[in-house]
Amino acid sequence: ADDCWSGSAFTREECCQGSGEGCWDAEYTHDRCCRSLDKKHSFVVPALDVNVGNAIKNYGSFAPRQLYHMQRLVQPGDVVLDIGANIGGFAVGLAERVGPAGMVL
Image (cartoon, rainbow, N blue to C red):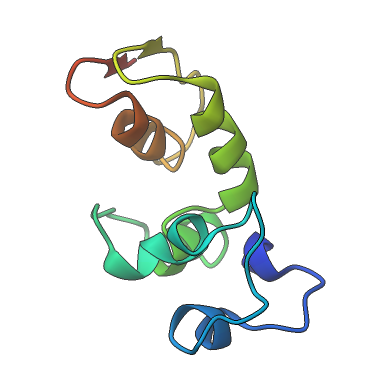
């Protein structure tokens, strides 16, 4: 499930492809919640991964709220250590935030 609308009366389609009226607040913005529709990055995910891989393929992240908060902690040019054991769902979003002057290891 997409965390942007967890417990909300709105759906992703209504907010991202419709008028979006009433969907957004200071934390959950159109850019943050709908950006994955633009699919800036590509992921290769296991075909039978119906959890993490499927969420990344469809939404750009398996935990959009957590990634959003992590991105708020880093600035362009920062060096970030992503010590994880999955397919890069956080690393790619953090790399986007730190930009070409930064690094995610």
